[in-house]
Structures are given as structure tokens and as C-alpha cells.
Length: 68
Image 1 (spheres, rainbow, N blue to C red):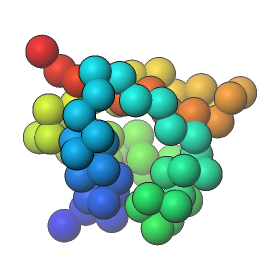
Image 2: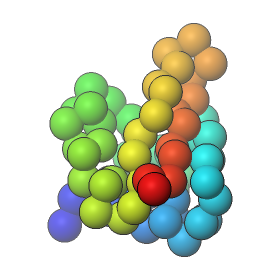
Image 3: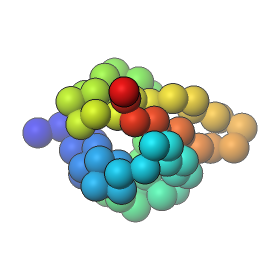
Image 4: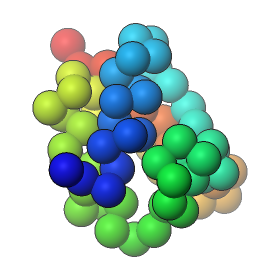
């Protein structure tokens, strides 16, 4: 089980075409702060039918998009 499993399940259950979450929201959902390892773990999200789009360090947001 991935340390980001709760986040991946949250994104999948949301069901939106695109979902933007702040780093703080991700911390609340996943129970851990987003860190550099997120870049390694993000590929797991494709198993849930989504992918990580834009990661904005300036806005501190992550855009998740549904795969076709």
C-alpha cells in the first residue's frame, strides 16, 4: 500500500475530469505532507484512471486529470 493511497482513492472517488488540490488539502487527505517523493509515487495514480498534470510550486497546487 502506497503512502499516497488515500489521496489516489480520493481523486478517483471525486470522479471529475480535472481536480486541483492545494498542498495543504493533499496533506489533510493523505495524512502526510507532499514531498519530493511525490514525483516517484505519482505514476501509481494511473492505476486509478488519473494522472498528475501540472504541479505549481508558486500556487502550491497539484492538478489531477482523468485519463481517456
